[in-house]
Length: 122
Image (cartoon, rainbow, N blue to C red):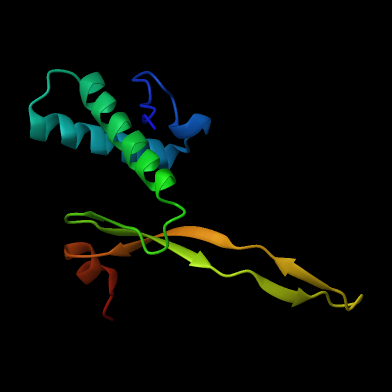
């Protein structure tokens, strides 16, 4: 299965419009990538960020069926696929039971410097 790589000129990720704070965060990331790789334009750095994000998404989607699949990003953390089993719940007034389907989630386990800074001491 070949991964689909996002286009450079896309406005948002996955066709979803970005909020002002999210756009500011992506712009800061683009500027940092441009500075660290000594790229000539902001557009080149934006393309790299978009390609990385789409490849990361494609990899996780390909392994969503694998319980415990782990993707480690050095200095940030690990993305881990978790499956929660299907459960049976009872509806309040009617008393009938319905089945909640299996859920697959991707959790971010923060590591390194970010983990140390998560805890706020007062």
